[in-house]
Amino acid sequence: MNLIPLPAFSDNYIWLLHHEGRALVVDPGEAAPVTQWLQENKLQLDCILVTHHHGDHTGGVASLQAKWNAKVYGPALENLPFSFHRLQQGDRVTWSGIDFQTLEVPGHTAGHIAFWAHPPQQDPLLFCGDTLFSGGCGRLFEGTPAQMLRSLDLLAQLPSQTRVCCAHEYTLSNLKFAIAVEPHNESLHQYKAHCEELRADNIPTLPAVLATELEINPFLRSRQPTVIDAVQKFASTSSIEEADIFGNLRLWKNEFK
Ligand code: ZN
Ligand code: FE
Image (tube, rainbow, N blue to C red; front, side):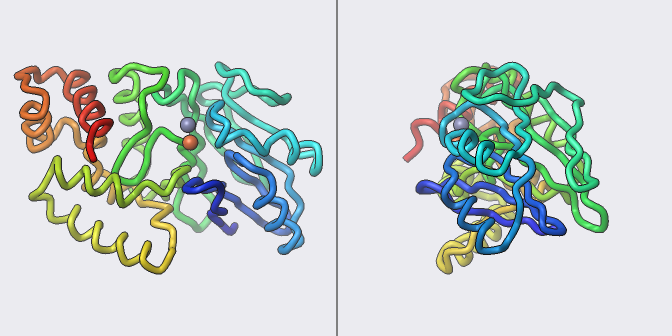
């Protein structure tokens, strides 16, 4: 089982898995980089997973579906401009002997789903679309802070060695914000230095490891006293209600430069 991040647009990754000549892709926002890679590596595409309806995650699906006759799976609660199998919480997709488990993670969009799988002899994989980023999380376009917090809680309890396959290379800008929130978090400074080295060589910072995210990602740490303090100062509030803290943390990130 091989895992490849295919760069697309300016900062998307289309994740590709392949095994014994067959391939699966997640969120192909464009078809060209996928087709080119499949042809160069003499692979057949037989499965497409979609996390949510945004164009940078779906734009290439219809043409790939037609060209390769691939099966397409997506969120039950969203409308997508192609035919697909609708997945809900707990539904499984089997590909190449591996079960992909559907997790409902609303917040960025109302029907957003994620996929978790545990390939044999490898660390587990999470394809989380625009819900969780390394050092950050997706914008709340269609959901409430409470919903997104619950979604991230669901992801946070997955096995800590899970490889987190995020859909965008946003890590360095997220870490700049994370350090503003937690300036004394030593793991965060170390991780930032590591990611800066990777980006200087044009290497993806992803997949991230869930255990690392739990130590450095303020959106997974919104119940930590250090994060609560910083958010209360930013928002001039004394509320300790967890959805308020999380919502203000997200607002802070939205306006952070
Ligand atoms: Zn999106
Ligand atoms: Fe996106």
